[in-house]
Length: 111
Ligand code: SF4
Image (cartoon, rainbow, N blue to C red; front, side, top):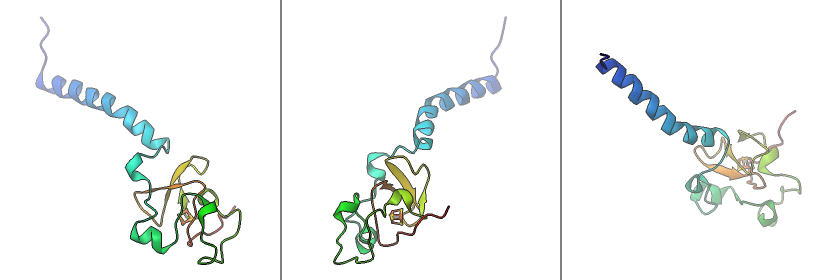
């Protein structure tokens, strides 16, 4: 007769937990934003930097340095998959910015 030790039970439980978390981890690594992770343009820091989800919404009178073609997707400060619709940004940790978004901290990506 085979017995199941406490150690084996923990191994099985650990493997089961990992199996349950795998889809979540995969989704996060794919650069898919969770709805509440998207940067709120109305939040104080985003508003101060003039962040918008789409460059067409930039207030050019407030930000005369803005030029067509400047988007989060080609900004040096963007993080992760720059071809994805949403990505990280070192200015806004823990939040996702839109690929076609913009803020006044934009810097052309090198290389
Ligand atoms: S710093 Fe760059 S990537 Fe971040 S929000 Fe501003 S333009 Fe987008």
